[in-house]
Image (tube, rainbow, N blue to C red; front, side):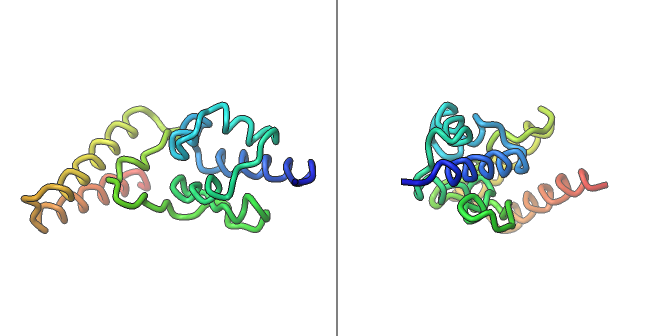
Length: 140
């Protein structure tokens, strides 16, 4: 069993990482397929996430090694879930509603095109280019 101080360190690092990723407790709960109350218990130190749960943090872009050790980086590139379309990893980020809606629409179109039997490479590349241009517009 973990010492109380170690539990608190894990709890604090999980909360810090979640906040740094810009994800609400509900958003992280959705990504990990647990309840918001479970996330709250993890962040308060009442419970310690299992290794399986910690490993799932990669789907939210959080480095589980940081949670366990405190060694950065805190965030990592989001890993897509195997055998699921990209929309499954679109968690609740703290951005405006238009950004969420526009990004969600583009991701759904990409997923549909990718899964469509009539998919042709030009159409798919066009959607990827649109997504890149859309995301680049936020950096200007």
